[in-house]
Amino acid sequence: MENNQEKKQTVLSLIQPTGTPTLGNYLGALKNWKNMSDSYDCFFGVADLHSITVRPNPADLRRRTTEMYALLLALGLDPHKNTVFVQSHVPAHAQLAWILDCYTQFGEASRMTQFKDKSEKHPDNVNVGLFAYPVLMAADILLYQTDFVPIGIDQKQHLEITRNIADRFNGLYGNTFKLPEPFIGKSGAKIMSLQEPTKKMSKSDTNPKAFISVLDDDNTIMKKIKSAVTDSEARVYRKDGKDGVNNLMGIYSCCTGKTDEEIEKEFDGKGYGDFKTAVGEAVCDELRPLREEYNRLIDDKAYLTECMKEGAEKASYTAERTLRKAMKKVGFLQI
Ligand code: TYM
Image (tube, protein in one colour):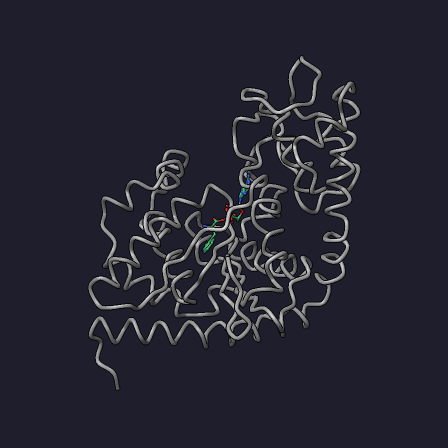
């Protein structure tokens, strides 16, 4: 990744407003958004269009969109320097998604593992939106001529289909879209459930002890980490099969910047009790400033609305340029 001084490279990523993000969302994606925000031209958004595939209650959707937006600002993203926006405020996303739908094959969309998982989980509502979900995501990314997309590993396949769609379109009409690269961190790419560490940490888990929400208070965080599933060996080191310990080591490493070797040395001769206390404290220290800033911002609705408007304007400006280019290539009549 190189940076040239005149034109910064572009970074884009979105998150769905489907409830308070987990430590997984935070370490896998949001923390990297913040880290990249000074050196790149950044577009970060709340993917409210994506979230209606599960038909949320309208009042909940409005509230969660505002909450997620406040949380993005609470990360420390500067809404004037970066573009922080709500996806449905930028109509170009839905417009380009339709065009790209017509350049995506049924077969390739059927192979998306998230589509398969979600249709199995909710057999009563396998809607076309769920099927076309990755194409909307491709539109999100391609509209901004994005260089890097900071995401967790679960979204990697969606990045691949985005590149395939872009490549196909470029092949037919000449260079229109930049091919994006995923940006996946080393240790936070897949944070696992604290109760079943072979499963991804997810906010929709029915067991609240399985995940840490980024707004959990210190006490709750400590309790959840202390009750995390480990093993009977009582030795802190990384090894295949030690899923619970590997996960806690990953979390600790993301929060402190320590390497596996440093962590193994630090807890040499100590049991899981000491280790879990240290992990819990590191998570509390990491999330406390975010929670405090969020609590301050969420009461300032006027400020949030003002920032959303600015974000929508800036995002639309860039997105519409690409949309117009694509529409022209396809052959839509320009007036
Ligand atoms: P979403 O809202 O499910 O998750 C937001 C981000 O969090 C990451 N993530 C995790 N990372 C590590 N460990 C975990 N346990 C974990 N759980 C979630 C996700 O990989 C994601 O980066 N489709 C996307 C939202 C989206 C998007 C986009 C992303 C819409 N348009 C364009 C990038 C670019 C999603 O549902 O993420």
